[in-house]
Length: 214
Image (tube, rainbow, N blue to C red; front, side, top):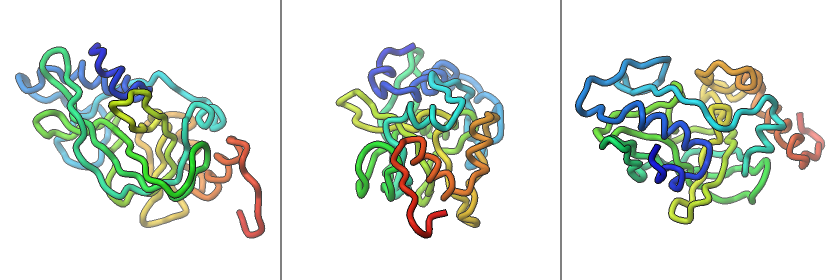
């Protein structure tokens, strides 16, 4: 595995990116692999199976493993850096500009964060890890994030497959489906977004009920 990947993000998401690089190295010289699961977006998206180095069984564990948990809205996205593979392949990351509407655990409110995630192959083909679609402008949800320790890449990343719950734009009382089979994901995505917000704050030890809260 390319050691540069570990230095680039220095976070659990690097496992998924490293697997993607290993799987897709040399893709320009061969036919694209068949998608292994459902994916929203472009029909030629390459879906890469991967496992994270972090996996939580409970919400409290997920909150405890995250550097910051926020309610955030995507203001913009752009191309990031090339993460080169050992066989000439590579993945270009997507940089997500996230407006923090409320901090549920860690950090301060009223700020913007840059979240880095796998984006595209070098030929522009979109990449999806485990069938989870990339972030898009307007996405609003609860994000469980970890911080890079690399000063050259001072970004955040979603902690793992369990770490992003986007509000359904057609029904703000529910989250969109996360296309990954996992008991904790199933439990959290069924919650009302307001209820999950309170549960995260409780898990972080900062929740203070107020009149009118649900």
